[in-house]
Length: 527
Image 1 (cartoon, rainbow, N blue to C red):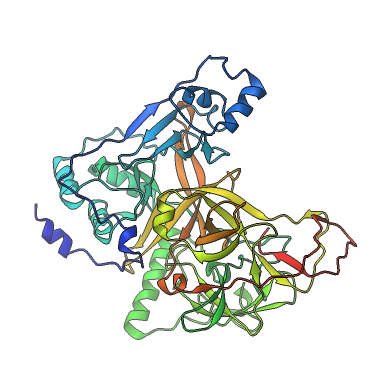
Image 2 (spheres, rainbow, N blue to C red; image 1 turned 90 degrees about the horizontal axis):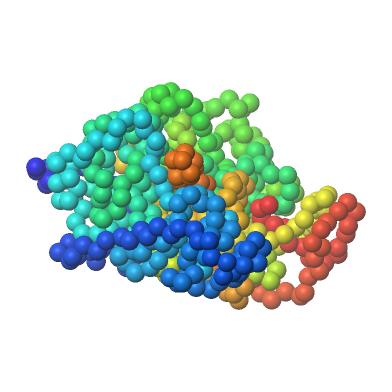
């Protein structure tokens, strides 16, 4: 088989700004293969920890997982006891995790991270043995064992597109799985019926349909970034001083552009027409009917470029500034994430508000190295506050900081065959958060814990994606996973602007009708 011919015929996709230390470049194909260990943990009838609440409390406080207490933890811990299948998985690269068959409210148990046992799409057709040619091709293209605590290399991604030509992306999971993502069930079935390698780089391969859900939406409380006619909102991210000296605020692109959802055939045909006209005639997108505008500034038509839009604090007359730069080129026809590489826009203004952590929580003052995050550093996600001089009373609403401990699940890679473009994101889930968090696009994933003095920013939340998991009796369900695109190099080279010390501020935890506080207030940037 002519591997060189296959590689040369494959289009080169731009690789994101990722340091060599963060990529899986030190793979040694000649090294002896080290196996993943998935050890099934059974329940126990032992009464050592008592019963009921007493045993559950002990399980929640246990600091370490050992051979002596692992079955007790599996039996009594609230995040393990209901799972039909529970493994302790040991990676060839040195770390142990819990691997369970259902979603869980906690991110750790007995000092070990809790990960979800993934499943492929439940096809009815029988499993087809891997053709010898596919096995040989996979061995030739991806040499050695893939370390899921590193990013896939440019060559890895090209190899996956050769092995799975109809795939539109992949999830590289720390638990030892590689989930290939497809646009439709038909593409999953086509790949399944053709035959595919069940293992790539030592990882178990699963096939599934892709799910992407941008998390900006209209909300009823709080003050967030919004354009003047917003039907969609997004959190302010961080205040930055760029290498050139400009001061900006970050926000998500998808909150301020059209996010279409049309039938697949119509979307593909229309998008092809637009791409062709742009390429051949420098065609400019037609002016849309004014009645159809949704998020634009007054007098402007709907656009798929947010540049030039005025941004306000949600449901206030306080202008934040104007979007002056967008790192994406959203498709006017195809839905999110087509055309998104970072889902990031920058806001400039004469008097940009300070963006601060909730009172009593870490100050975000630097950028975390991706290597540190991938290695397993503790994480938390936080929605920051915009400091203003005004206060809007929210009847019957609690104003509470949005902070949640989180655990990294892996990385996701999405590519567009037509545009020869790709994007990379980190995947995580948070404690006590098993549902959608619409309205929190732009919140910040940080290293550390909410009790630290300082935190380091990693990425912003951009969307949610599905992770299919196996529940009891083989029924297949989707877990909701958070995702944030890797950031442009110039953003990670920017300085995070930390507000100066302020006078103590009086806060109401519950604000009702008629409650007034004269001190300076902070608006939650997303509730």
